[in-house]
Length: 233
Image (tube, rainbow, N blue to C red; front, side, top):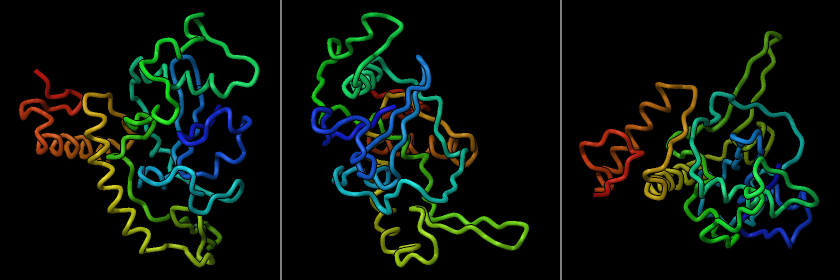
């Protein structure tokens, strides 16, 4: 497991980087197997990828009660070779003692990267989730049999917090997320798309909206149903 923030270089901070995690632009990368990894992005960055990656994220904390929807986890995206090389480069750059690979040549991802400049590794937003399938929830409420309840907004603040359910922030983030969706679509055209478990709400509808937008922009041919295929001769 390691962190990636395009503005925090491995030589500037010691692993595991306690100062990295509270930053808006920090992603967490878990290598789950030789063929699979989990990438976690702070909600604030997904809603506005143009934020300063070094700013403290909203309500940053290391411990506390929380709850999230497992069905919102995206899966099924197939990374291209360049994407895998970049992830391996990040993992190797933060390694403190040992690295391992199934093939010796995999130990040197930097030799095969077109450009290994740290600040530009995620310029095409490949570490972001499929933004068209990031739901805009503003909180969660759970009730228990004893009559008690659990309430928090999308940033983990309960009702006693002075900024709980901040409608002004939510309205601004709704606007920036919509802009980010359009930019993400243009940056990731022709790439594999992630899926979520909720087939009707997030996959079928979101894929159609993404395809419709790309067609409106002239980036997807009218007779191509899938936005995974770019409009190239």
